[in-house]
Image (tube, rainbow, N blue to C red):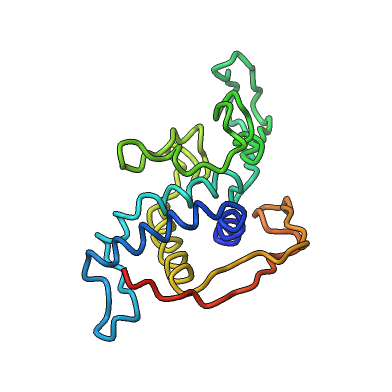
Length: 200
């Protein structure tokens, strides 16, 4: 689900695709990341960690379209939220992640911009506060497979980007279907063209 939104967003923002590809080519050229026939990339932990811009683009994609867009919590005991809101035992609290990322009060005036650069400082990937960006939940309930998820997403994204140019079909309606998981209501229709080999 996350990768479908990622490929749609980089189709809409070709400069992000170009920067991601530039980073991939640079890292694959400087590391021993290829097989003997030089066609199949080998993903090393070192190489994947160095792909800062790609991780930022994936994080920004998840910010816009969190795979789990709404969370429900139930109050075990009477409590008070930091803003003074009182909660009674048994009350249910909905956390609308899909709306949170579009709030200027949380993400700033550029909250509606697809901007991977917001995740990078001095060339290093910087995670957002888990309560500001609860895509992988927060605190004791934080997803233990977060790093594994990023690794898998990077590997698939790199494999596709290196080989193909993926473009959304003109006129196809891409809208979210709000369920437990944030699917695309009409799926993602694309055209796929082999990418010219980069000899850099």
